[in-house]
Length: 188
Image (cartoon, rainbow, N blue to C red; front, side, top):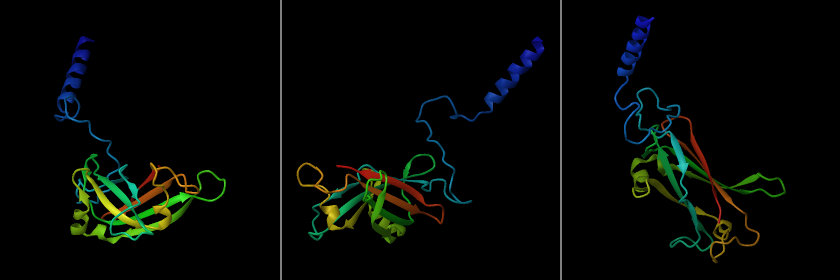
């Protein structure tokens, strides 16, 4: 019986010694959950797999160089690789803006605006939009008058008759893979 126990202990110690360094005990930051990798065989492991609309996203009602009946939706987009680190990436970007739908059905929404951002597929233009301080892409998107008037000038309060919220939805397709999709609700 003792011999069986000693063999079992020896087996466990041998198995534990085969574990690679850094895979368990020690400092450093914990690894982010590894989503199902979307990289194609031979693809880069640091390609983006998650797109997130960052909370810095906002409506800028008074922007120089923008017509008085327009405004900017300033989209901050963050891309992360499968290890959870912020990265750059190129691809086809589509941005949609939704508002509450008419009627009394809660949760109903209406698509109000759509932007196709072809320049996001160009490495040079893409890189110019990257803000190293926030590790996000800053994309000013010209929006219609009703978005400009969504908030009143007094302290960010809603104007009478304005929707209670606006929802931004992004879909980024990089490298011919599945689109990375995220939504963010803007509230006053």
